[in-house]
Length: 79
View (cartoon, rainbow, N blue to C red):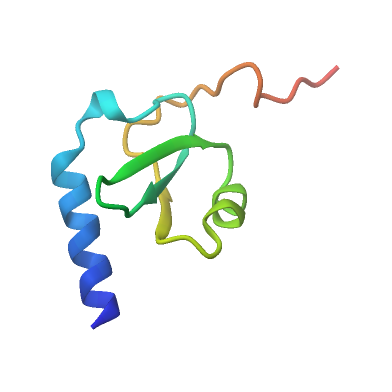
């Protein structure tokens, strides 16, 4: 039952969201299931996202609108 509700919530969030709602600079997003579904695409790794969603009615997923370039803040520089 819980899996069905989670799947339904994910489908609804994907239908309701459009590309402008997703930050294209980061590869992973947190989808927070509250009365209003909220997404936060500020994660450089799935591990970083999973640490944030622990204990929340949320899940992590790959950002479908990620363009392949991360912001300067999350990009590592090699010298």
